[in-house]
Length: 391
Image (cartoon, rainbow, N blue to C red; front, side, top):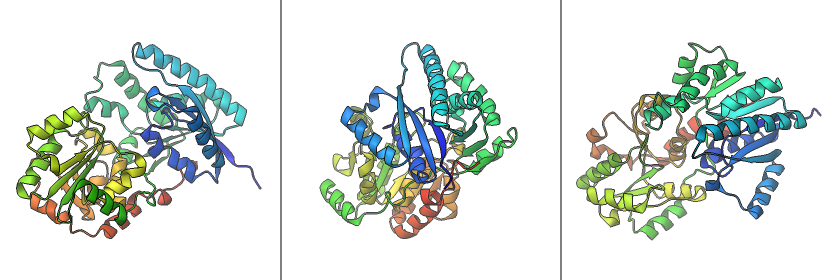
């Protein structure tokens, strides 16, 4: 029996970061029978892990052929110097781990992690696989986080071509971005949208009953759910204004707003758009409870602003919505999702949210959840996803 290949995973995230939990870890677990993984994460105070919890995580990962190592993440004041420090330490420690465990492939996730992964692979003479290769600099520019003059934007933009050309395999989330990359990159490119565990994200009728009863939601209510952040590259005031229009058409609408936005901000928006307290519920929901709240809902809302660069992203929440059988209201030009939803009658695709016909929104509740789930599984199931690590 041939020994398993060992892959070094450079994950520039904290272990408990939702991005790592949804975009990196599931793929490692899926392939744990085929490969050994040496995982390096960067731990932030925001996602602090207690000692007893760390022991349990290490045990779980070890059972899945994953050896976990961690370094401290540095940011805040003097950010440039702290990132140079992280880069240097990350590079040296990664090279040590690669030689110690005889790794044959370096795997990195998106920007800026794949920049470090690029140099790790070159210095260790190993192949480099990049998952979720996207125009990160343009995302941050469009969202107003970076400016074209900022060093972060200039560095990331410059490195996109360098890293892309130097990789042995690129994995991106949309067919459209693959075509863009083809203009200047000869590296093999594979399109895999953000996939999810469709066994976990499933409709639960019992949970639906419990949550709706708890929140005072009755059978005739039409529950719209939004899961995610507010502001920046995500809609904020627009969501409340849209929901206010829904209530003017039918008083049975109810909004589930699953976000970490402050209570004061939510209250200000609710008052501004005259949304009654008994017509919405808001709060942060842990991952384990997300499928229950999606089950309690009837319609999902994608609140990503249709900025140009989002055409090339693959928002994971779309897969979560569809897998739980929810029709989706989504802006035009979001990933390949808008096209899939429109072509398969899985919701409403809009250009102008203010022109969305509320009567058509009401009709979405009548769609067959099992049909939506089946198409969602076909589009986003982790089980159907090809291997990330085959070169």
